[in-house]
Image (spheres, helix red, strand yellow):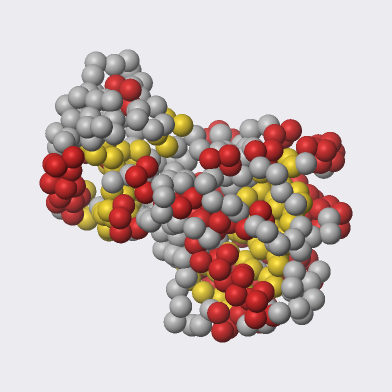
Length: 431
């Protein structure tokens, strides 16, 4: 059984269901009718680096070691940017007997040269240089010939949405061209491509999807229609014994207000900075600090023995967590509750890397998103340049293949870390 996995970064279940029903995505409508289509939970936090790492390893962050786009170097306040080399669990294509794989544009797989594999890999977001984003490196000249683009220039959206949409289309076209090339060139058993332009589109133009009168509503739909055509082309290249999976890494919804977590911690007496330049970083944390946050809302107790200027004794850690839970349980902005759920690390993670996890992770109520900048805003809430935001609930999973309904019964709501196990079960049932 060959397996094909198609990722649509950030596309929620309800959007896919809506556009399939309306005929904007007719190929998805066909696949939904023939397969098992389910809503899926994302990772905690619901960011792409964590979610895709869980999808490709079948592990939770306590096992694969990726807790966010940024992390802390052990025993310090120094920010690091985890790369593919920092992934502590093997992606499914590295497992013994997994066969040859062609992997295109999966986030957090840069540099591609960090790990050897049986097959080919083109790194996804955040990929910086093409020569390091390709394994084996000998593929780079052909990708240059195809005008392959590692990512959308999101900065264009701040200048001109027209220019942004043009760049979005060029980037998508280059990913589809690479998909066609490797589909024919490689003798693969597993093929995976992730379309990440969907996430960029939703961040800047989510309101255009919801509002039919929006000037870019039809441009939004046209981009999804183009992706649906690529999905139809891929599906047409499979036979009845092959397995097809389409999925997203997290949901999406309208963004109404950003909430600045470190400002709240400062105002409530949990966070204090030494005198610092106008753009402070975590190195400015004072020894009086009890807790601080990393994006989006990962909260760390400033524990003595864990951090250089740790002020909280280990015996007082639980009391400090209880105080923070009380604070965020009652947090309101404009009469609205802000925090849907505050998660202790032991509740959501397990594995050998648990001690590196944040002590608490906050999940926002609908319409809110969290930021953890240290350049403090004037107030705890504020507007954003985005109109859409990630959601932990509402990702989608579609499986088409023999046994799909059995491994995905209607009452099952899987999580992103369950995908690899589902593929294994389907392949075993086929054998």
